[in-house]
Amino acid sequence: MVTRVHVLQVLMSWSIVCLGLPLTGASADQPWDELLGRVHQLYEQERYGEAQTAADGALAFAHDAFGPEHTNTADALNNLAAIHRAQGHYVEAEEFFLKALEINEKVLGPSHPDLATDLSNLGGVYYAQQKYLLAESLLKRALHNLEPQAADRRPELVACLNNLADVYAAEGRHDEAEQLYRRPVQMAEEEHGADHPAVADPLNQLAAFYADSGRTREAERVYLRIIDTMERAYGADHQTVAVALNNLALLYTREKKYAKAEPLFRQAAAIVTGFGESARPDILATLDNYADLLRKIGKKEEAEVLEANAANLRTRIR
Image (cartoon, rainbow, N blue to C red; front, side):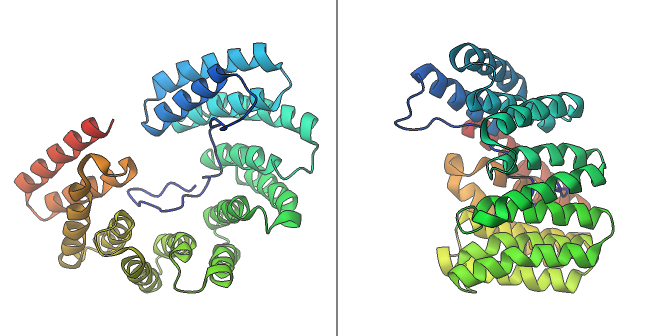
């Protein structure tokens, strides 16, 4: 994904990075399932040092239990690469993603749709290093592998479209980027209807693109649509509503419209804190964003209280 500063996304670009998860009823030994589950848990908690140690152990186990050219071994390599990428260790991430891709190409064949994950993962590393031509080439190949099975591979296809759109946007190819961002919106609308909450995910990507491109009125319009959709689908106190409120508030903050941003942040923060330990870890950034605004408008003491609450929540959730 293009990681946009402070913007919480319901669906993030480059989200095709998937850590291997235990498969219920799978034939793999129980230790393998437990290892994958532990790696995933630590990764989601952003405990990357521990996650890396666990992933190293999972790779050693996979190599011994399944062999060096097995898809489980490729999954273990992908896990290690994802952890390194999350820490900005792009050389190591590239090495492990390449090894995983090589294994899966041998096992599955070069045109298999499952390769889209590996191709997109590696493209994400190149994107992060501004190697846009390399990223573009890999993502186009991923799309080529996915398009023939688009109906059965909708999530991966959408992620690849957004990822390639991110590359085009970074290169200043805004018209091409917008066309790609719009495709998942149209796909979701055709499948679910224009007012279904599933449409909010691709709309969020489109709105973020508009915001980053300086098209603030269009971004505002899309964010308002997302808020309305989520409130009608889930109620005003749902965590996805907090995400949508946060994103619109950030747009107003960027424009220095603090009076419009503050009530949105306040509403979003109330939703997040209301869930307590049940709050999604990723939406706690809403509290950080609100605290940043409070400091901008001279409410330092309120900001400090909010930051303390956020830190306390993070400790309890972990």
